[in-house]
Image 1 (cartoon, rainbow, N blue to C red):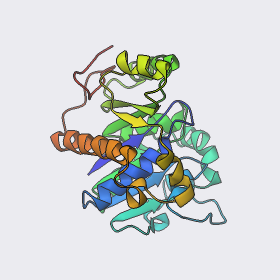
Image 2: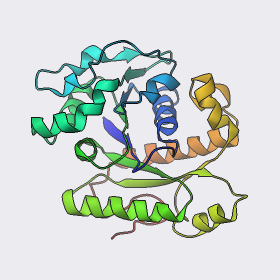
Image 3: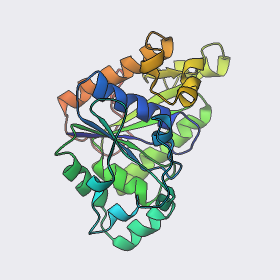
Image 4: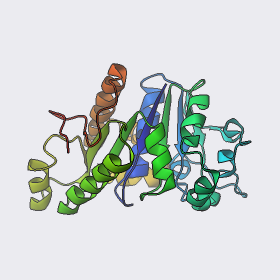
Length: 262
């Protein structure tokens, strides 16, 4: 079992689209029983999989000591892919986790759910708080989509500093250059500089259609350049998970041509 978290310091970087696509590829292409766990109160992962909102707010309740996460898992239209959906109750989850005082509650539940699922993909809310602390403690790999902007370096440095201060041992970190447009000089400059070794997810019309089709990209545009880029990313992730290397020292970044340290 492996837990893959898709996390970003800010929204609007294609985080949920990436989470849904990777979960689908783990299930459909990798043949692995996969759980997509939506931790974002906006519920985007469920929406992209065609799920309609259900009245009530039970998603946060499963984090209580008596919580039963298995009861909320739903099947999807795709074989081997299940969903643990979000709802508005997760807006209060940071405070709830702080009061609960169990820093590894999410990790404990992931271990429990891992008995039935070989891959667990976490679609995480943006920001640094109690939820991100729990995610870092639970994840085997932390994927960080970043737009092609000079601010991306600042965001990545902030995350590395946070990991170094509060998480002496943390999961490998994979920055991904998202929304990339090679026709823009600034994008090319970022790609040739700090992001030279990062995987790329292009800015593409087909990816925008994911929210229209409400389906993973590979189901309706499998031969597109964007789908090929996501397939390369998926293949690299599976290869690294198969290695299951020990967690690096604080500040390390895994993937690309080399491992850089703070």
